[in-house]
Image 1 (cartoon, rainbow, N blue to C red):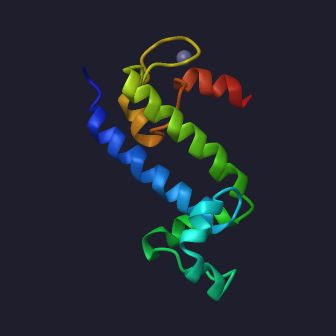
Image 2: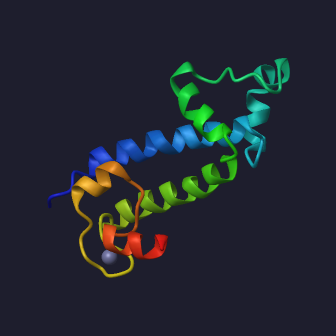
Length: 121
Ligand SMILES: [Zn+2]
């Protein structure tokens, strides 16, 4: 097997955590998380005091992309499910293997570059 699934799993889990924090932070669907961190959240609604590590990341998402965070979270969770099912790294459109370089760039992708380009058109 050419794909290091452990590595991608770790990466995807890390990414999922960030997205979950971002979503909770923006209060767009993470009600329980928000409650758990209620102390922080109530001190300043618009204060970006999440982990400094994710600060830059969140700033990017702040630019009108909160909904994308939820969309991406679903994609990341889907990728983790495919990892568990042993289907990770296979294009969902044409069934070919997705090159590792592409998975490294976009670990949650379900499409090979050709099909991704087709969709983007
Ligand atoms: Zn394909």
